[in-house]
Length: 323
Image 1: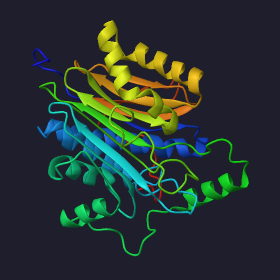
Image 2: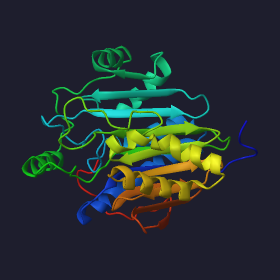
Image 3: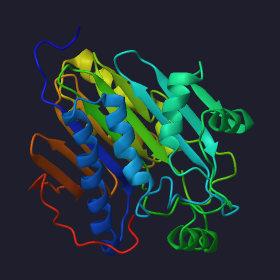
């Protein structure tokens, strides 16, 4: 047992690293604070950390302000292809999927992969068959996850020189710890605008986009997945903090900057150590994030942004069509 005594439960989420226009930041903050509250309520009623991160991610998968589920980025052909993963830090059980189409909540299917498939990672026809066997229902007609915003982003990308990955990011993720020190992490994404059909990023790769271990902590990544994959950033942050006996925050900051300096790209993450200490790090211009601890929710979007509110507050104006 790694954790001595009782830990104060925490649920932290991110809504993606990138550059976000000012008019969309309130929608991002509304979404991440709601997700943090929903996930935390699972912990408050003695639900599992796996259920907590799943429910938090589901909130953002259903919100058009994020690049996951409804509102996901489009591939070169104008279709949504979704990646997701989830990990239980107590058992090291994992569930990953990639290239999924026309399913609003890939994170729930990833959990079923973890708990019922006998494998860690499913793709293609086998993934679809498994989903149907497990009672998941795909959207009919296809294409209902596509939003006007994502279509406009694809057209903008096609009109550019396509040398730089445009768009605001938006990959979503959650990490939770309960009173017993159990940790889980989950991440879900539509990838990058204009990606090739079949492209897989860091999100479903355990150790790159997602990692949870009760003895180390939990982390969910967002950003340039093709770069993140090369340095196995999720595991590296947790393991480096352990080996150097340092807090997660400075380690995360340093490793993000080292990755970008060596390979380019930007990224961000949210993380918890085994004592429930929070880390929020990104070297992109924006990354929406929020966490609840007790009756307080913290949230932000830009580098120096740190705000607090009571969990009962709803400071953001309702946004039509946000959910």
